[in-house]
Image (cartoon, rainbow, N blue to C red; front, top):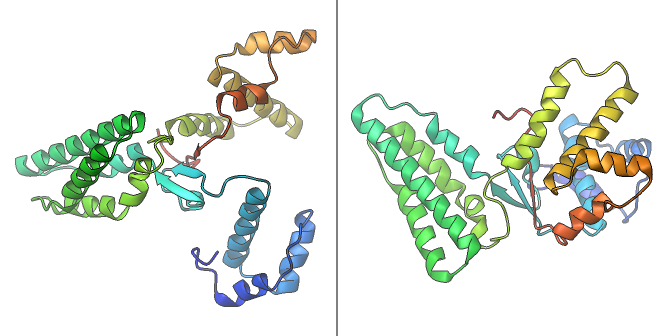
Length: 262
């Protein structure tokens, strides 16, 4: 909450509270009112902090890595940036002459070379490769080209270096959040398509969409799964067992902002 800019006064009131479990929304609103926290921004920060604390209290590892497209709400726990989204900041630049276009081509080529080196390091981590990646990233970001817009983009990359190179310390994480983007893109499509005629219809649609995606990600036939459950055969494993069997201790979560483009 401090990192999100919550002032000292509400922070002090929260610190004075005894640890407790707040059961529902109404009880939380009563707590906020009792503490005198009413500013909309302060309420949002405190509520997000309380929710994160509740998640950690259930046993989620606070060192878990969140991979995102840099949307601020996902900058929690240990944060890593999606390489594909970051590269778009350079991709969208337009060079106005041959020298600027050559500088852009060089920068993008270097960036993807570092990405490929990171992928190789993830497969077989070693100190020599790590040092080479860090040095190459530093050289890229500190190069001054003839294109000022590119120089500013490289400076932003440099400022985000720790989050971009997170895989050097955590080789188990993904370098991008494309899977999350594909999931959220279907949600956005449903949201913008007129939706369903009732809340029950929406819950039904969303539940079946979630089941279908989970089956697909774990190599299961959704149709076979439905037939198995409708017949009561239960020959296909319970889906949570398939998820946790494949990822007994998930190391990272990939998040995409609902408004993110393709």
